[in-house]
Length: 409
Image (tube, rainbow, N blue to C red; front, side, top):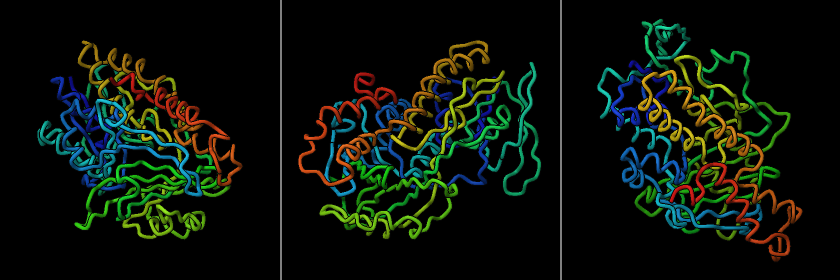
């Protein structure tokens, strides 16, 4: 069986590893001329770590990242709203790990190179289209660096792991557009002394006024005890244009919203201004679709279900996709039946996550408290909402996203 994976990101590489584990060969085609460790931070929740542990990567990931112990929610005045244990500290069999996205990608890439010989992992191959018949699928490629036509590739199965702007998905949904509702983000990494416990995922404020998420992704980055802190801002700026991807950001475009965020435990403007790296991104997704599989072609990860980058769930869902698809291909003689079975198992489940990330993400806690306190500092939060009610809001998201504690024990 000839399997071609289009895209060498988290989804594509984890799929290749899952297929190799089950004795199934594949070839990966990546558009970038060279795969480099780029980007900012990512959080691997316990259900993501379950998938990576099954590939033998847990120890390496823990060594190169930060194992989170706590998640904490604050209003924009620096008052703590709610906190809860995370990962192993909450009783999960798997940790929650904050790590540099480029480092995660590098670990997956090295593992794939160990499994795939040099002729099964190609870079500089940008997919420009496909055609298929009963004999299989033909992929068309151009060389990314020169835009020259490359030889066609013939396969029995083609799996699109080529991200939110998937060329393969566009073949089947040519008029589809990204959903942008006016939320732009800026993301950076800053060398900073440990914040709170140094093992805490922090959410401050809400999208209604201004929001900041931060968490550590590397310890003792400078030999003097500082950590590398990943942070992300979200601003609702209706009527303005959509940010670009991976474009260097400008602090002047958003710092005014955070100028007064100076707490006894963190100076937010100083954190932002101290960034080593800063990118701008739009907050976009796509409406869920009912069909991912077309003959010998199917979609995985962001190509199948692009979602708001909230709740650290995009990578987790891609990793679950990869394992599920590999299991289906290993258990079916007819690969096209396997693709349809995979779609049945994953399409509706991920649609729920996409819609939940729009309407009731984890920081619904912050939004709810902001509404109840009229966006003012509070005296006794219990006068407005109980900790039990806030816990239920948090637990409800975990159930939809698939990392409720009962599901992973």
